[in-house]
Length: 253
Image (tube, rainbow, N blue to C red):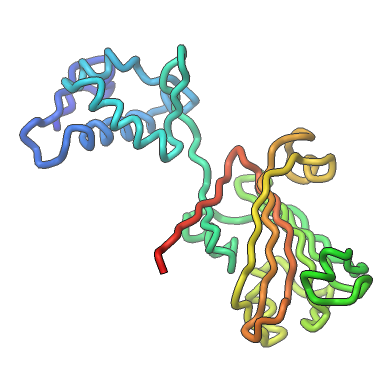
């Protein structure tokens, strides 16, 4: 693949038709380089398909295959009558990666920050008591955390912790929760039962996550069991949808 200019859309850039790498893959590489440039990163538009396919020396169908890969990744967005726009990719989180949000984001090179931590003892609401297999009104430790990165709140966690854990409200809840439980309670989180729904941000969540009231959020209800299959936590997690998405990988048993 040759590159005769720093701006392939403005000059002729011919792909190598004799390469073992398919043309659509070569075009994808060129596009990946283009979207990193300052003129395109700031939500700029890419050149139109006719000009870009002509400069690369490929058909529009081949170019669209390359663009399609980046659209699927969330790096590009197509809009009818406007063109192809560079977008900020959403951070992905696997549904199965429930054990530590902090560790999962660390693996992606993202440093998670805690913007607020609130701990209180309250009577378990009926739904929470049911999930934790407690009598309604039993006192539980309730942990609220707002977390994110780069100064931007992204996720709100509300965890109701089983009294069996005997965690103190003075514990260091800035560290990963299940690591804290293992260290202080000698109890290991082993399974998570999940339910995902779409909700609108109420006034409280809008304030915590710095969004407008009514903004779509992803709600994740989670009941965590220990190695003895006993409930240890019921959590309600709300994610901002504009910069975050969950993924689910399934494998045939």
